[in-house]
Amino acid sequence: MCSTPRPVSRKPARKTSTPGYAGLNSRAQRRYAILANQAEARRQRREKEDAPPSPPGEDPL
Image 1 (cartoon, rainbow, N blue to C red):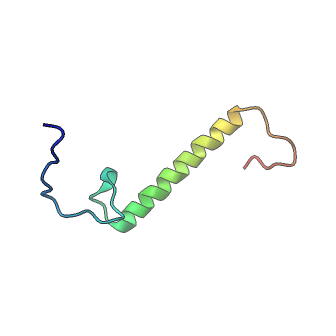
Image 2: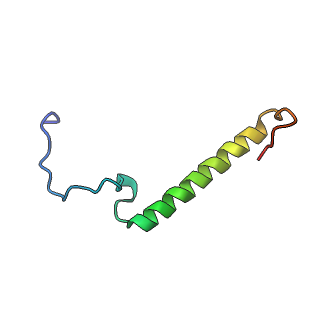
């Protein structure tokens, strides 16, 4: 049952589309990706601040 591929009824997806936000247009998609990247960078920066301080001469930002 699982081994047989299901028939593809939908139109082939564009290269830019991803299952998470398939309904959005490219501009909203790009904006969403940028916001996601900013949130990820912010989270990593917070984890770095929780870690021991970096050697002086390196900018924490």
